[in-house]
Structure formats: structure tokens, C-alpha cells
Image (tube, rainbow, N blue to C red):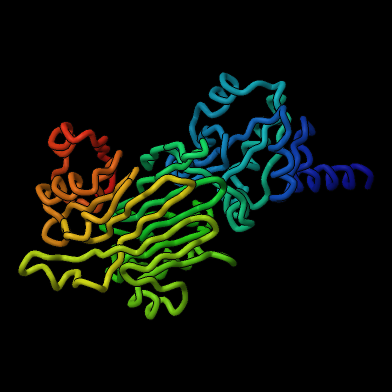
Length: 355
């Protein structure tokens, strides 16, 4: 009877993740809050044992990526992770990391496993970070703080500044590219220029909003969304220190005006800690651009016939005169020659993955 009870207790402890089945070095299971406290310790390494694709779509900041499904998993761990460090380990749901933690414990590592995995971490609203799957550009604001621009897709831009998250025209899917907004922090501010499907996406808005998210849209999109702050061309708004100006965005070429009629859609100028950012929306090189001054960073669209030709974009850039220009929304249009075309104008042209 004693032997039966002893075997039962050993099996129970193994199931709970408190020891390996062979009685070797234990590992600990903790919930999200416990894991968050562990990774704040100084002698801890965070290990992500999911696939590289999963890792690039979003991970816990500072995590090292080693796929536990690879045959040389243990060898990679031994060559890169010191046994003097505690290993905080996670996967998508906690199953793979539990098995990996058992293997590492058998090798003499002290491991802490995240119950529920990365899914539970995200559901709890904990911060995640992205890899270089998206281009990221970093600038310094007037007071010396850092602001980052993440090229997501087409007209979708993520901006993070001083702990605040700003989303421009977020869409979940465009062509064969899908953006996983659940892997990103919830937005504090969302700006939507107009109602076309490559700019207004109800699913993306639902995934990005939280209590207190401020959504700014044109009048048509507010009617579709049923909430938010509507702005019309020429209006200004102050959002927690961010100055917002709604500016015109429309087509002028004959045969194109039905795409974006005058007066309906918005471009936005955001002034963030002294840095002026012009997000043009879907527009051609309209006369009102002559009134747009002192722009540090501009996003100008270039996909004919819906927005500008490359020639129009050059003219628009020479009119606005931004310090840095990001052509975006360019689809299949070849924008590779724009840096050379604007070199003499003193504009830093940066080509990013805004297809």
C-alpha cells in the first residue's frame, strides 16, 4: 500500500509540474502575474520555445527564441543559456513550454513555466513586442523623447511614443498579408482617413480598442463605426497634448474624382511633442498642400489612379517640403527612383514596406 501511495504522489507531482517523473530537478508553473514578477528579476532569462514565425508575429520583450521542436533544441540551449540563470519559459498555450521545461530541468536548469502561455499573456493585456518583420524608424522629438513608426501594410501605420500607442488606418488583411493586432498593444488613439476597405476595418478597430481609446474619423466613418470623434477638413482637436489637424484629401484628375471626392476624406497633421507629422491619406497633389508648413515627417500616397503618380508625389513633396518623406500606399507602383528625384530638394526619402 505504501509503494502504491508513493508512486501516486510522484505521478501527481509530475502532472502539476513540480518535479519530473524521474524525481529530477523541479520546475515551477506560474500564472501571468507570477511570470511577470519573475521576469523582472535580474538573474532571469526569458525563453520563447515557439516557432520563429510565431516569435516574429509577437513575443515578450527580451525573449530569446529557440524552437523546442528542433532536434538540436537542448544543444542550442546549452550553448546559449547559462545554468547560473533562472529560465522563464513560455510557448503559445503552455504545453510545449511545459515539456521543454521538463527537459531543461533534467539538464540542471532552474525553470519557471508560464501557464496558459503567450495567449494568456496577451489576454491579460501584458505588453508584447514585434520583431523586424515590420520596418521601424525612430526619431527624437523636441524634448528628446523617442517616437517610433512601424510600417505595417499599405496605409496602416503604428506609432508608439512615450508609452502611448497610435494607429493610423489599421486593417487586418490586405491581399495575402494579414496583420495580427492581437500581438500588439491596444491603441490609445486611432485615426481613420476614410471608409474604403483598405483604410476602415471594423475587425481591426475592435481588436485595438480598449476602455479610453479615442477614435478619430471622418463623418462617413463615424456613421459606420457608430462611435468616435468625427472631424471635417479644416477642424482641429487637442488629444492629451497631441494637436490634430484634419486637412483635405481628394482626387483632382478627370476620371478619378469619384474615388475620393473633395470634402469627404481626411488627411491628418499630428503635432506630437513639437514633431509635426503629415499623414496625407488618399489624395493627389492638391492646392491646399501649399498651406501645409513646417512638416518634419510626411507620409504621401503613390498608387495611380487612386492617389498620386510618382510625378505628382515629387511635386507634392517639393510643395510640402518635409524633412523626411515616406512614400506609402504605393501598391505595385515603382517608387524606387523617388530618393534620386528628390535628392536636390534636401528631403530624406525612405522607402519602407508600405505596399
